Image (tube, rainbow, N blue to C red; front, top):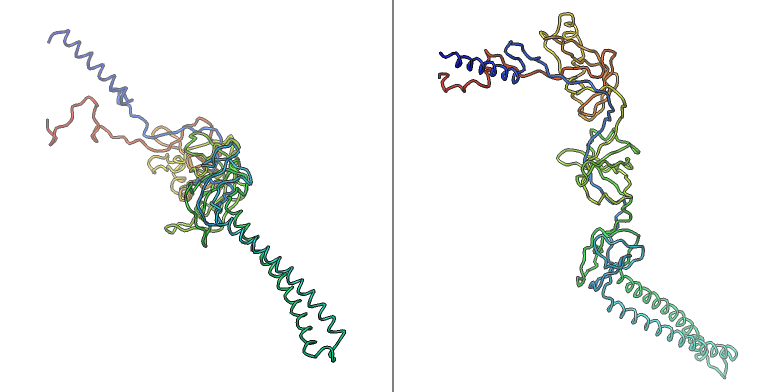
Length: 432
């Protein structure tokens, strides 16, 4: 074979070997990579939390209805002079809508006329009482005698008593007519729907020309939020976590419409009326938050974190490092008693059985493992709190930047079927 061709084959072989070494990180010398997957111990802050989902709600919502039936003929004006609509800001007493008041105005006029008649009847009855009283006084002076018979005497007395009773009836009729007038005037005033408080219109449920009918339940016309600068988040908390929630507890939450922005609040109330859905019991927790900038809108979905504990400037390790435990053949003989007789693994198992967001009891003992050649050696640690991903630990042997084991590599040897990425694919049946 030509010498130049041989050189080309040698050069291609060297290049192939070098590239294979880069891809496998083992080179042509046959060195094997570490069988362990490691992570670095880092220092930082850790907040143990309980996660839940809630809904942003106005602090006080008022359902404005109608007490009378009729047709909506107009809407009022908000403080900016615009017609009342969704999102309108209104003051207390602002006219929201006007119901056709023709029938109620007629009732007022009728009741006022009835009052005038009752007052006139009362005056007439008072005049009759005056006449009957004078007749009775004269009858008493004469008495039953030849000038005044007994029957006339009795008739004068009866007429006087009847006149007094009629005056009392007339007075009662005036009171009744007055009450009827007040009732009619009140119904007339109900035709003007006014805002009971200062707030924002969240929902307008009627249109001009629509007839509202007030029966046993008052029809809802507007949904009014009192003050959107102070808002709440209603959070559904599982019964397994409700014992860790308390009034005044710090809370952070996010909403999808502002990704990356964290809002702060605190627990204001824990409602006792639990709900059960598919045998899952949840309690509603009210979280109070400030909304002075008006960013939070009613009914946004909130992803809530209840802060259970906070650790600052502590050593943090992945939870996987506390879960991993070696086999007996991976540990030096001098640590064999730790593997076989220690209860650390049982402690880790108890930790993993907890809800992932529940804090681990401080002082619980655990083990971390660090590479020692092809073997591993343990480090005893005191386990602190966890946020579901990392756990804070304490140990004199542990320091920032130390590599700890969190798992094992999925390695195969050449005899187990590993092959070079440059080898041709096998032919069906194992033959080429």
